[in-house]
Image (cartoon, rainbow, N blue to C red; front, side, top):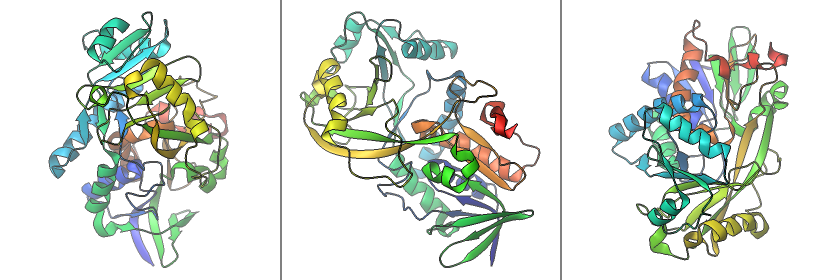
Length: 379
């Protein structure tokens, strides 16, 4: 039986960041994941995610972004590969949009100039858009395209033979955690569970707090290719009303404009990756582009599906959107990590450091807004 100090089950961006932090600290750690970097499955699959420095969801997210940004820049410097491509982020919504107001407040709170523009100014600066005259608009300068596929490959390469590319089951014990793959048995002093949509299956008591949803993603052939090119077109998030928010990217891969709903899709199981996004699922996105970003509107040329693991708002200590769980599992040597829907990826360096400390420093406690004690069943 092979032994280690810490096992990390699940090597998406957050689990991979935790394994990297442990190895950098000289901890004897192993990572387990049957899903290879570059696969079309897993919470961190695909080429890119949005990175925002100033977050409308909650002020705590902006602080996490600061930490994560430093980590991404460090990885970029050490690897010599592009991790972040700086890109403005345009956020717009109907008059009085809470999303736009919160993003504006977050930027101002960090000492940035007021990012508010009129819709006319935004349309002139970015000709692909046709935002209504009365819409609220901010353009923040702290955004970037996070190249997730590059990061995933770097994380796996840096961990080298500390990665076990097999499906693993685990059994907690008083003095550690036994782990079994198809070919070998292991024993770890502690184990980090960063299992994405599979976390509720691994810990059924946690399943009541988690909903896995299907998110349709499309790439659209732009009507005006020059207007949506990188450097001329921002990342965008458009608040069209309750449960109707659309986000998208510049055509930085010459693959079309990637766009998808920011709101949650239908609840599915953790293995429900198919079928590919349908025309019916993507039609509302195409309609939104036609109405608000005509330069990006055109036929669907590619499609994908992501699974979001959404953590319920706390019932014991209301958390105003702080839906991460990063904490020790009660009366065990397990550490659990559940992301806030699709947002987990961008915070990975900051989250990975916290997971590594939870596994190695008995005196360390994650911030209260990450803890299971927010929920009555864990009080």
